[in-house]
Length: 380
Image 1 (cartoon, rainbow, N blue to C red):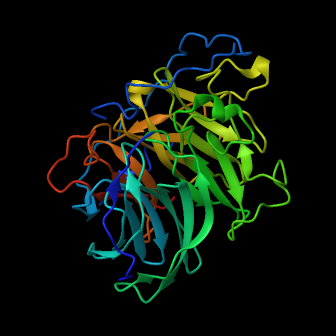
Image 2 (tube, rainbow, N blue to C red; image 1 turned 135 degrees about the horizontal axis):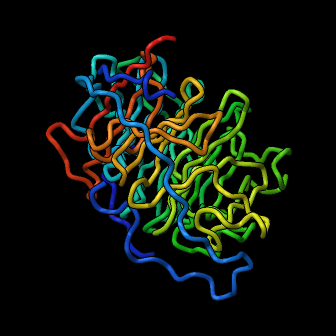
């Protein structure tokens, strides 16, 4: 294990429903206290009354789950490399290696991570022999690249190379999801960090989805070739995934009204803080393709499997299935069966891996929590 290992410190200051069969949120995700809305008058029309939540299809009869790993502490993200799953723990700043037999070992503890209510060690993404890591440091949010050395069961990480750093950070709304798109570019979600006007400021990296090359350089085909900003007007994006045709979907926390599923367009403006949910198209903002009441959702990590968007929900304690062909509809799966769900991915064995998040201070831990649960996807 690297000599960089140390403890994290506390921050100071500012349908597939029929195809999915099991094999294998208590307190609100968002804090009650919020930063004030901008002092200037929004140009958008007032947010309309809530639209009805789409009719939900009943969950299939539950089977006995297959627990892949258990005893995790406030886990946040999963990333797969071969037969191994890497998991980040938000508060401990540990990166874990989960073997196919469920054995878990600490690969490393990321240096200089500070954790708060929503900051700490967050997103992971693998690219070849490198692990990309999003974390909150005293200097701001950052992404670092670590070369993965060794063999399964004894992986170790090299010294970190900065990819992007000094991004705005806060006690809340740090975004944190990272993923490589089909274009091999790295996409990064940074929340508004409770500085709501910053989401509309193109010079700020807060409230944005960023797009950079794996070495941290800015792609020349970005909306602004001098800026990593790919889209703006976001409150707190928590997950993204790409359909087979390249369409990018992103999940996003609302404040106290509507959570969102958005289709992301280069240079698109999604309206925050002027619009929460739908109602911004007349003012040049892009409306979400689906919204949910905030007390029923808190959509976090997402994955696309068999043309279905799977969304892990925290406060809603449900895995939602949204068809790519009709993203305005959705189906609820396994409601309440595993508590808060933070992330979802396709595991090494081809099943869907779901990461629970009941030990982060907002859930109700059960025996063995937190855990990775495997959901089988039968072949057509």
